[in-house]
Image (cartoon, rainbow, N blue to C red):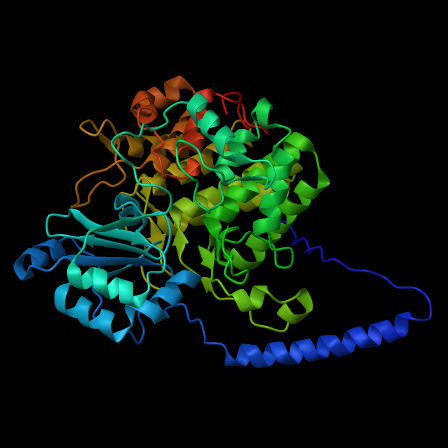
Amino acid sequence: MRARRPLATPGHTTTGQSAFPRATTAAVWLLLTLLLASLAAAGRAALPEDDYPRGSQIGWQSFEPALFTRARAENRPLFLYFHGQWCTWCRDFQDDSLEHPTVVKVLERDYIPVLIDLDRRRDLFTRYGGRGLPFVVILDANEDVRGRFTGHVGPNDLARVLAERRLQISVTGRELTPDDEPIDTLEGFLAMLDEVYDPDADRLSGSAMFGTLSKRPQPWTYSVLLHQDAWRERMPGLLDRAVADLGDLEDGGFFFFYDPDQTDPDRARETSKRLEQNAAFLWLFSDAYAVFGKERYRAVVERSLDYLQQHLWNAEERRFYTSQYSDNFYYAQPAAVRSNLPPPPVDRTTYADASGQAIAALLRAARALDDPALVSWAREALEGLDEHLRSGDGYLHALPDEGPAELEGYLPAQVWPGIAWHLYRGMNAGADDTREQDILAGIAAFLDPELGGYRERIGSELDPWVEVRTQAALAWWLAGLPDEMVTAAGIEPDRVHAQLRLVPGADPDDAALGFWALDRVSPAPAVTPAD
């Protein structure tokens, strides 16, 4: 594997007789800053990887379909709480609202409280309409949604909603109404993005008939726009703003989101770092460097690679970890102070879909930088993914840091490793396509004729459903394959394309790769003629 590239750090030089006093003053201030930071760090609450529900007053249950039978017997709805250990707002919601005595009393008396890790059960998160964290869904015994809300709801409001069993539906973005029409063409997709483009802010943050976009970044959407001639002059501003909002110039990588409307600057940036999102940004800026040739985009790619290698990659076990916790205090410090503080902990779970995205991004970067060492790294990661999560012709979803791999029959866990193998084959002329064919053949089993598409889960007791984001990634992969290979695997692309619809309130990234595929745009850098 390639040697680690050191992160670039800003610096300056001084000349003349005043250099020594300046240096002395700077050193004194640095020592004082380090002392204060150390004292503050010592007083911070620890962030162990299993910090919640440790110490919770609530009798949390793990999700299983049998809970619906219990709900009928006890006449109590399910209170599903989706959280992430890495999430700042989840920790606040837990401390301020969920563990409030009034809320605890109502939950224990009137509900069956169910705690769900977003990453471990992303299938449930998307099934019930999750967009952001913290996310709560209230289900009756028939699995009908009686309430759903995203974000930090205060303890009094939460207790009142729970006690009155009021229907409360609120999600990031805008709810779909009967009068709303989904977007199902590239032309409609681009027209919507043109409406929400804010040239003054260099963001996709305005409002349109479609609805106001969420505050989360849209790296896949940017990747599509990067290859649209009409957006060529706009893209440098959008890309530079993304780096300014989310890039960590000290440790590298990208933060989870930035909310420009947040009045508290200390709360505007969610400082967790997610593997899948960092992979998407690595892909985006690799393509941006290939398209524009600007050295600042190459620098972003280099920093992203260094971040992945230093923080989310286990070279010995050849696997990627999923995320690094948020820690606003740590990330507010300059490099000299950070180096004396313990970095935020890392969730050491490995996921097949996020790992596939990371490997695909490595190969995108390898092409843009002409770096064979990145191809070797991708090969190691593919072999590690097969070693840890491959089961038969497919992949299991998750490998916890301790315990066996789990959750079979999850479609994203097949699609993204398949894309990674596809791009790897494109970087190695004459490479065997057997592995890619095997994964495709396994995906054929996910077809559900009644749904008209490839279901998100097989082998689940829950009713089947289709997830647009997964169909979009599958469409992108299929667009780069020879027709005969797709036909031999038993895949029906028309079924996939029919699912590419973006509803109001949804993130453009949900369908972006699918619209890219429908347009048959040849991405830059191209991997295969049909890519």
